[in-house]
Image (cartoon, rainbow, N blue to C red; front, side, top):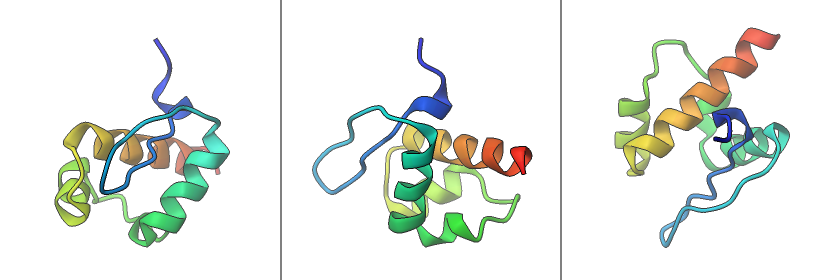
Length: 73
């Protein structure tokens, strides 16, 4: 099974699909969801999903990816 950090969810109004490197995941998140670029640790997948009207599991993945990136710094 692929690690969550290798996932890229191309989220748009129509569909969610695709996989790629961590770097691209981050740039997608920064472009599409600016709130994640100024991430505060309190943000949970649930709030993120509600804010951007995306499926819960996608939001969870994005929050996890972002957490891992912050820990690496």
